[in-house]
Image (cartoon, rainbow, N blue to C red):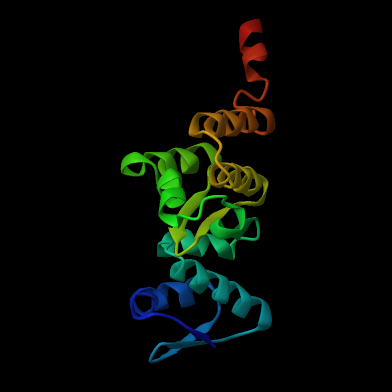
Length: 172
């Protein structure tokens, strides 16, 4: 049984049927408490989905956690920051008009939210480690441009876009 704030309970109520349709669990809501029933593995997945909703992810993104290759990671800002001003560090992560956060998500192919003093990331297991490293570097003071460069290099190195097809095309 988990306890959530009212805003999260509202989102859970709105998505209850969808969650129960995607994951074989039953969700029972009593006030601000949520109880999940089902087999152990499905309950675990259900708890992760509800946790993601609580962390600010939308229902569609949270439901990605039912796939075995998607993970949810929480990076604590306070543990990594040298700055005592949490708002300044959050501002660096969000960027002007949310642009830094958008670019981080785009380059890492992960979903990122900020809630309280944590950066929350949902992504595929191969990609999430790059997003975590980028967020940690950003929190510790690295320049945004260096972070973007790191993510672009990681993307090219581990996920080549041409897959060797350009050479075959040139031969034709």
